[in-house]
Amino acid sequence: MTGRRRTIAIVRGIAVAAIFSLSVADQSATAGQGIVINDPTGIQYGIQDNKVYLRNLNAYDSTWLPCCYNYWIDLSTDNGKAQFSALLAHKLSGKKLSIWKSDPTTAGAIDIVGDF
Image (cartoon, rainbow, N blue to C red):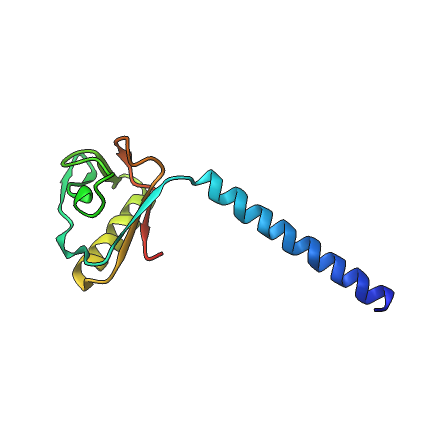
């Protein structure tokens, strides 16, 4: 292996290690729990005070808190509007939906809604 090729190989190795380190750090920073809902047509929600309350997530995962005002999407933010839009699109299409919360054992806003 020539000196230049060896240098390139070392740089690539360092880059791969750095990317791996960042991905591991990112996962620990977003520790939490997600639910994959294969048929989101049954998701129940109510809208009050600019929040969409997700009422029956415990039906999909019993470790999540029960009905009725424990989890919400904040419609006062662009992120919340996008999350609710994604939820409605999946609810209408019947396609799999994933919901993520940093700590589902406490009430609070949903962190991520999507297809992951």
